[in-house]
Length: 263
Image (cartoon, rainbow, N blue to C red):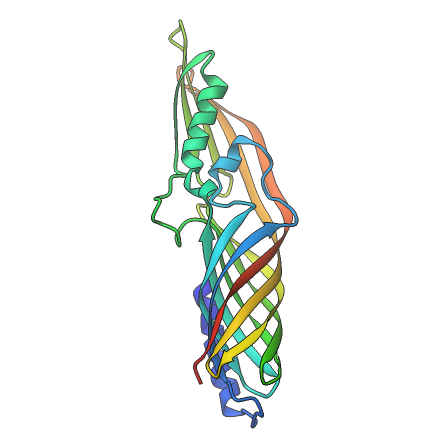
């Protein structure tokens, strides 16, 4: 999905470049390096066991690792950017799930929990929220200061993993299994996103600007987890619970970095 957005961006650039008007502002192409924090206005987590199975955190950090802006007139431009990040909570999710299952069932059972929510400590850019956005930019500049209001559409993406708990009842031969899974059987969830924002800052040099970003993003989540209980002796399986994460999610993102003027 993010690759499709990049293709659309490059197509628009090719189209607008042919009809480009003369511009009083010198920069036409810009790229941006940015680090920031995602602050929840509404939270996705529900305080249930399945929170540990989401490759997501309501509070997280992000890198804007790909950003390209093209101004095709004095005031108007288009922009594509890709953000990826995580948090310590995402990295430790598997450990928290296993510890929570041990605590919940160990009084009555011998417990063998496992989960797919295990992410390498070094996998910063692969674990957590990924966001690709494409939109329009309006440019306001003086010799030293600038402000770029923007509106973008795109995709917010993160994973949903499985959790399994093997249970051997103490002092009996009874064995059970509890299995949590996304009802869509999906390990990746892509959500249409709306994102108004503004970039502003100070021009240090001709090709280097100090930059701050404020963005409000919105998407509608759609994950529904199923909790399945299995009796391994009778082979009976029962869906005990549906845990619904269908929710309107609003997030405030605050970032700081630099803009490089390419041309």
